[in-house]
Structure formats: C-alpha cells, structure tokens
Length: 326
Image (tube, rainbow, N blue to C red):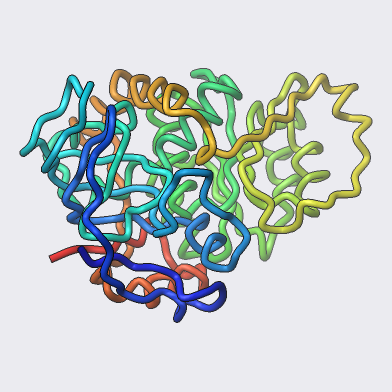
C-alpha cells in the first residue's frame, strides 16, 4: 500500500508517499480501506517531533479515518467486510489501509459522505470526553471554547448548543466570529480586539462561565481562571501558548474551581470504546438528523498531505481539513 510517512522531523515537506506492507488485522482489529482521513493539530506536532506515537502505534500519522472494512481479525463481533465506518486510531490514518481496534470504530451516521465522516472521530471523541464526560457540562450552563473555528471549536460549539448550553467562543477575525455564531455560539469574541474575560463577565452579570475548553494555556491560564464562575471547570487539552505557567492560583480555591487535563491518544482501547459508545448513543442521532454536521474547509489528495499541513499551520481554516484517497 501507499502511506504518507515522515522523512525526519520538520517542515510539512518531510511528509512523503512511501510504499509499506499491507497491515493484517490482529485480535479485535479491523482493516479499513481508507477513503478519507482527517488532519489534526497533533499530526502537526508529531511531524515536528513533539508528539510521538504511543508504543505499538504506527509511525504513519493520522488519528482518524473513514472508509470500508475489508478484513476483520479474531474476536471482532460487530463489523464485517463491506461495512462503511469511521474510526479513531492511534496512528496510520494517512494511508491506503489502516488498522483500527473494533471498539474505536463507529458506523457512519445518517447520509454523511466519507469526507464528512473522516472529520468526526478525533474532535468528537475529544470534545465529548473532556467537556461532557469529565467537565460534566449540563444543559442550562454556560460554556466558553477558545479557537472556535478550529476542528475542536466547531465541534464543541455545535455539541454544546445542541444540548441546551449558552455558548461563548473566541476567534481571531470578524469572519471567524460570524462563523462561530452561524454554528450556534451565542457570543463570539474577537480576541484580537477584545478582552474575552471582560466580555464574559459583562455577558454573565459578572458571574462567569461554568466550563471552559482550552488548548492555548500560557497567558490564557490566569484569564481562564478569572473568567470561570464559582464551581467552574477548566478542561485543558493542549498548551499551544506554552506549558510553563506563572499565575495566581488563589481563585482556584476561593472559587472552588476544577482544572482537568487529558490527552486522548494514549488512553486504553477500553476507555476509547466507552467514549465511542456514548457518542453513538447521544450524538450520532443528532448528526443523522442534521442537527450537527462536521464543517469541512478544504480537501487534499492523500499525496498532498504536506500542502494540507501547510494550510493548517496558517490557521486560516474554518473547520476541518481532510485528505482523500482515490
């Protein structure tokens, strides 16, 4: 098969098509013929040498894919060859074929295309796990997501809105703020022109928001603490602005805040399987009936993965960037 491998670490140009042996499914694994694969920020971090795959995972990038099951390993009970699926994987999505543990595989909801389905797993697993499972966002509460037009942001806005939450989002331009509002954000804040803490306070009668989903860290940490309500929860999923932080954490105690952190990739198959089951029960019906839909910004042929990564690094995209096969 042809896969996109890294010729060392560095710029997008290290991503190159190579020939690799066709993988064979082991116990509890499916072999998927990949028709589309999503691009995610962790792929960029891996390419730069900052996010190595966990032990046993392929060195081929790609954390999500959609396609057709072509072979099943022993102990696979649900899916069969010919099934159309999307999958969360620990690596290997940028290829003609990809192995996936069966618990991390889901049917394609509704009438979604393969391209749309490939944009689901990484962001939906991440948002559901961190915002709804661990931070326990409830209907009637308020929620702020930073990077509202990223894959994570567009997913979080739609999910929170669908579950009856008041949604705040930050973005870096008027166009992006408008896109956030189109997706369901009640308040969109251009962080280049406005202090998000002051706006949140003004919009909530000084109370603050109940949950924040943050991938920035750095200088945002103190501001997130300031923007949270009493008993608020901060879900940290990345530190794009820096992981070494100096802040006054007194409010962490006086406001009884909870600060949680997680990465998805190293979690066990059983853990990811539990997230998949929750998504299928609670979110897949919303996608099937059109209430939630992945936002696709641009697609590239698999062989042009380097161009897709270069686009992601501009941060110009609104929604997901997807690679296609065939």
